[in-house]
Image (cartoon, rainbow, N blue to C red; front, side):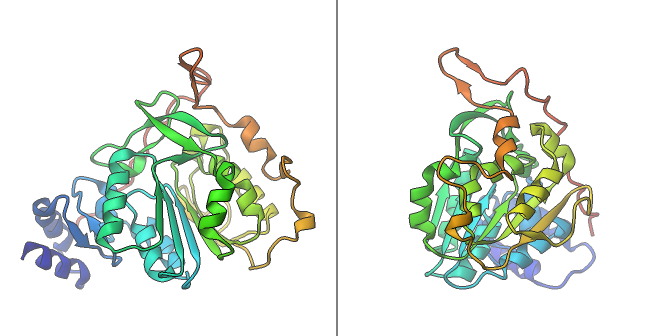
Length: 321
């Protein structure tokens, strides 16, 4: 009964006091799949700002634009979400691409990954392939600063992080992902709290292949600085691969950029040879700080040289209605 009432309120029109009432009611549904404002079922974690934003649609500035782009997927396409959290966008993408499409998600946090998988089951998602891993410029065991109960979206790679996670290089598993994705047209979403540039290097060959039509990337200079990154390089790298931004560098202090590329596959003669880096991506792997475990020395390479962990970004919660 409570679940039905909450879902009706979430889907109904806005009125003064609605958000406050829903937050109170959701305390009685912790861990229960509830139909979200955006449509997919999500496990309720009412203490978590990220979960509430996805569930109630109360942080539209960081969700509505991505949701609109996911809505442009067509049956039979592929969607790859790097930094999927509990899976709002993979769940929405699964509905769009259908049984003939593919959804791939990467989420390094084990507790969040558990909710990601459970949400996929609750939504009956088919052709869904989740990976409990981060993406980076090389395969490694990496340090990770985990989420807090109040803000799961703030978890990120961190040279002095409290936990260890698996970091994969997407292109190292090229054959596997080629079998999963095939020749499907593809959208890629990247939201990894500042490490977006490292993910681009990890996926370099796949991005060069030409079948990726859209890259949706979180842009935040302060978060990028954690990894010695610069949003300018993100724009440069993707533009050199034929992508065009919709908003432009510096559109806001924190925003999602949509890079579109016409559906024209790159001729094989213009692609870098095996083992050769594309100029647009070459510097990222050389300059990226390392979070890998040095198993022989028993210490973390690059730990002392890693930039100090930036103060965690705390999103401005919407004013209670």
